[in-house]
Amino acid sequence: MIYMENFLLTIDPFSILISPLSHEFMRKALMVSALVGAVCGLLSCYMTLKGWALMGDAVSHAVMPGVVVAYALGLPFSLGAFVFGVGSVALIGFVKQKSRIKEDTVIGLVFTGFFALGLVLVSKIRSNIDLMHILFGSPLGISDSDVSQTLLISFIVVAILLIFRRDLMLYCFDATHARSIGINTGLLHYTLLSVLSLAAVAGLQTVGIILVVAMLITPGATAYLLTDRFDRMTILAVTSSVLSSLIGVYVSYWSDIETGGSIVLVQTLIFLLAFLFAPKYGILRFPNSRTP
Image 1 (cartoon, rainbow, N blue to C red):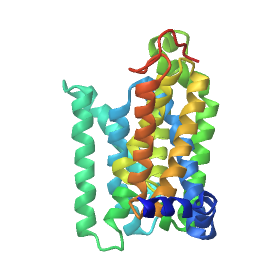
Image 2 (image 1 turned 180 degrees about the horizontal axis):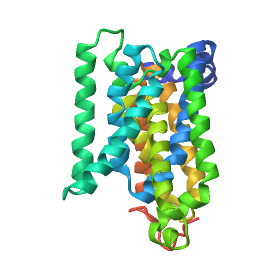
Image 3 (image 1 turned 180 degrees about the vertical axis):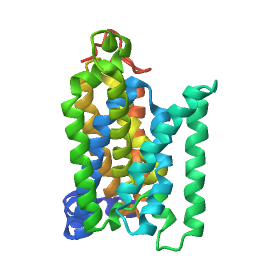
């Protein structure tokens, strides 16, 4: 007991926050993780309203063979991942239209098929690809070229979401009404899917293919429990996602655990807190509480 008290007294919170910043790899990891967290948090609001959790899972897994092919050909991994991400979406739409199979079944078939193709390519194509890096991400070891790609992709995603903000919001809330007032919902559909593919590519650097869907869904789901207003929902989602990314990187540094898993666990913890204590929708909410 005395030993534990002495240990706690020796902990310097300032050192815990500042010491990692003396390393360049930590500064890059924190910057990239926060940026990707903000982008995924913003997009997750639209994904939550649209009910596209499974679609996000499909796209995130379907980009794997594109990453492998791009590395093998010496191309930017983001290019190959984006092509296969959009290709998987197009294939899902084609199979759905040409068969009587329901959409959720088609999504499951396509993303598992693409993911399996990626695993086969990794085992057969000679390259220096680290399968664990693709599956679980590695922000602590991100290169300068990958940082530049992530910055560019993040800028494109945010720009598109801001330009089509009102139309996308209406489309996600009520696609039928959006179509009735003359909005091209087909264009918005594929725009949102393309943005989803780009965001999934950006998320590969921080949490990898397997966990990127959590970054695309959890922040929006958390914010959805906390407010009924879309503007506040986006602010809360981005804030919780960025905060989760920063805390997750710090925890992984001091605890020597997987960074992607650490980030997603922090996001999940924040969601559980909202699930329990959200003013209006939490299961342990206080009576007569109001939602902001």
